[in-house]
Length: 181
Image 1: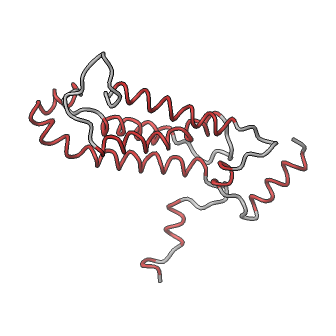
Image 2: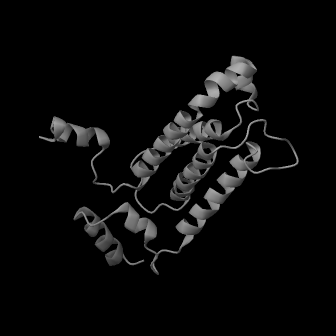
Image 3: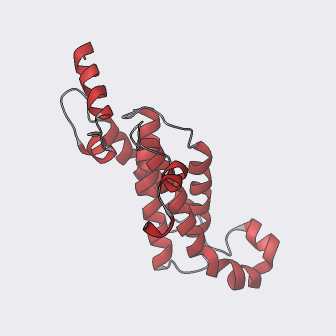
């Protein structure tokens, strides 16, 4: 890519015409479709890895002790849609890195695994709470773990793909008056 082409794209970013959705969805001849391919591949690997280990995908290796619920499926698929672009943006950067999102991504991945898994199959939960405690206390909070997981992964993806000149969330809150006045 020529220096004038690069300077033009940087100048357009400075003028506020850069948007992360455009960067993700635009496939032009200057950038190979490797981001999209890698994003889909990472999402599929995540779905297979978490789905097999948590027995959302039935396997002959072990049997899930509680039935798969709708919230299990939602919090199995939603994080995959966020983990795919997160991994792809680490390998094929489409925007300059604004911050490190590894801690948020790992925490979101672990929470999504806990949100999808069978409460009786998780040995740490059973060790800490017992069999009845896992069903009484841990199973009802699994959807909350899934929501926190999706929130962390979504925020990490937003931080990774936001334009370099975009304000951070803290700076944006300070610049806006309370209650929208």
